Image 1 (cartoon, helix red, strand yellow):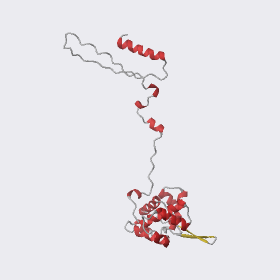
Image 2 (cartoon, rainbow, N blue to C red):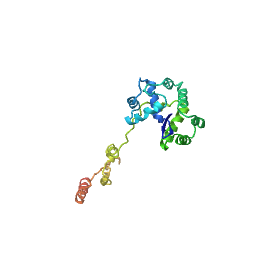
Image 3 (cartoon, rainbow, N blue to C red):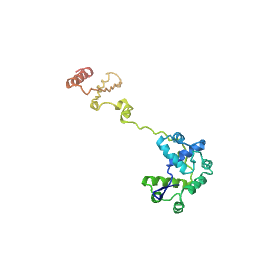
Image 4 (cartoon, helix red, strand yellow):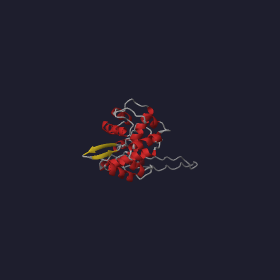
Length: 237
């Protein structure tokens, strides 16, 4: 909690971090504790922009994790240890948040809308900021270890969705025929030759399927010539 005075009015500000940012910072500290936590360290560990890191660093100082000179505080060893993590979170809650908030909302399953309204009234923050402040407060109040999916310091790369063009290139050739040629297939099965006389009456039969693909720009004369040629060679007409 930080206090500033403007025109005789004291303004109280509270930290805000998303759950991903908080869990990412803790996961990085579990790996190693740097001598100094600065903007460059936040950029590298959260894989974020300079502007975002410049917003995160003051929140770490407000939470008492980093001192004014950027040095890690005495809270970090307990935050890193799973067995003492909940106690460290409780220390932060008691150091940072007002008695009025902790008395009114002492359980982590409190209504976040009502908690956000408390921040809006008492810290003078807007709707979005007060919701973020409430989420961090309830996260710390719960003191629950992050799940396995939340322990990665680096965000997972997002999968690129296939564009319509790339999807079309991946289709099988059979599916990529122009619509103008659909229905231009002809199956011709020549008559089965009669069985030879004097035999057993059983002879092998031959069945031929033919597919004819006619270009969409073919004229009537070309189409007529194709079918005349088929009749001539297949039926002797």
